[in-house]
Length: 194
Image (cartoon, rainbow, N blue to C red; front, side, top):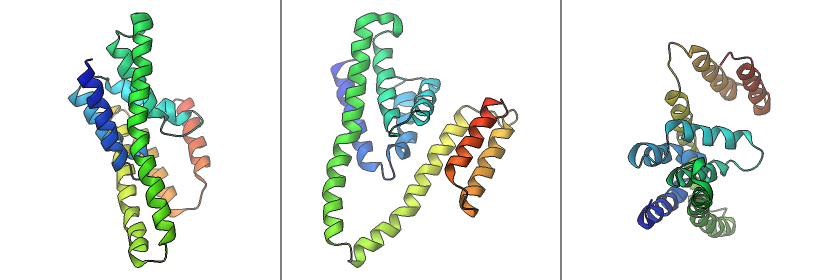
């Protein structure tokens, strides 16, 4: 990767940072388009594994961005066999992607939150909060769709589709805590049913 590629990667994640309403995970479809389809810096498997590993690990879900940066850098350095040069590029990838995704949204959030708190009784502030809810939900649905469709063959993976439908209905219509559903999904996955 050239210096221009690193700058382009930083700029893309900076733009995504400002679109990440509801968290960085909502921008995953565009990350997939940019990193896998357009630039071909990651494979589909690396992309999905980055998200799955980060979501399974304790801590903030934005860690998947660090894993994507790590994989981009590692791939640029020739993979694990690339030695110290590949490891250095992997660390550069983490730094570039995390700085790009965190800096703009953090500054904007800090500034906007202070303003919104001072003006919380204004009609426009309340309307904005109400209007953002469907956008966040749509972005999360598109991320779920991307993660489901990329790895799956509907004829073979019908249990995964059924589990997705059941989980969606349970979240929508019941008050079952999400941790119970995550646990059930983990058990079904460990048993090889999905």
